[in-house]
Amino acid sequence: MGISGVSIWQILIILGLALLLFGSDKIRRMGEDLGGAISGFRRSLRECDQATSTAGFQGDLSGNLIQSGERAGEQE
Image (cartoon, rainbow, N blue to C red; front, side, top):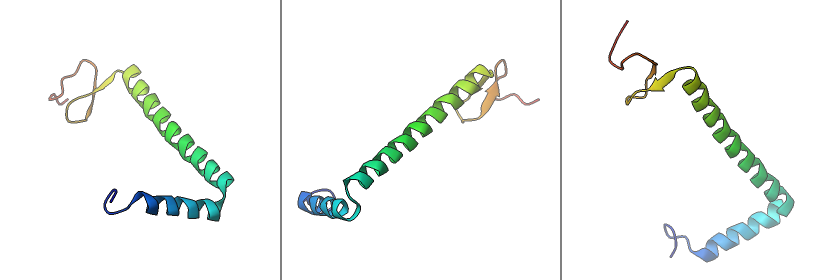
């Protein structure tokens, strides 16, 4: 038995059927698209972090953004 009752042979059969249905070229393109989407998401997170750090904002422990020089509990 593998993960939650699925054996390695069942996974191989499913992968083989997917290969027959879609073809290797289509599966390769779907993998490239998925990888591109993940890398784009990571890049946008990195850019967002850089933008908030250059704008003078920091996060407190509750996740709220505060401007540099302010304390987390202060209200204006």
